Length: 362
Image (cartoon, rainbow, N blue to C red):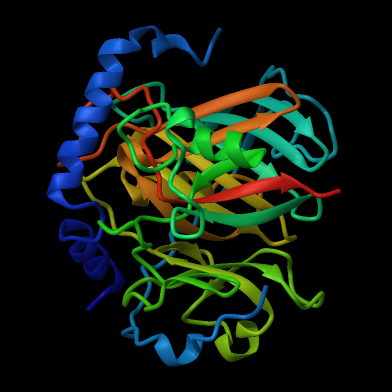
């Protein structure tokens, strides 16, 4: 079975989302929130290694990746208001015109933290087509998993949606003093991750998922490996890496070895993803406007940032990215999803049982 057929099968069955009853619950939650908080339509303006052997748990069918499409990149000068700090995502005053995009904003939030927004010229049919990219230097920030399994359910006094049992991205950030929060992958009806997930001694999901070929690893205990690494289960030595990190999250591979691993499709949704480049930077990426994953991958691959690997975190209205750095607050909220939430009306973060959170190193 090809990787793409496997992914389509996974997404079209139970894999991609929650149980039917949970969907009804969240539809009620969001519907209530839209009625009572319609003014928010413009708010964006105003400690051990895991006991489970990684190598022994992986039984993934060998597949061939899609052939990479060769892309020649040409640049043309435009007048963009881009700051000139050394950690710019793009060369100052440039856009890329083969698979083109426009850089619409660039903001240095803090040391090692830079926020960008781009609009690909091949736009989505819904929304403004903006893709948000948060570039992070892992030397300046520490990463952690925050899960309902490890923490008490949110106290009622802190809940934004009073009858929701999990925290939203913003609630996770506020309660645990986090600079940034994004989805820690997709989740099942019991709030466990759909893929293998371990945080030091806490095993959130014990079993590996066939067809999920990326694993995020961090909280290293060996200074000879990167602070954060996306492990490719097809190419990396898992026995070697198992003892060098304490936190692992398995999800679907999007980009690796200069390949787009997803086939073209009519299905599209809002996307939250995580990627690394060839010099060790990390990128949290979010698009509210829906794209097919294949189209989204092509956009990211043609940015001049030497993306090495990228993995899927979440899609649709659950896709969440919250940033609060030095008084700069950004709420990036997903909405559209083919076959589930086919509109651009969601304006509230949905509750999430598992998130990745960042804190500044001291």
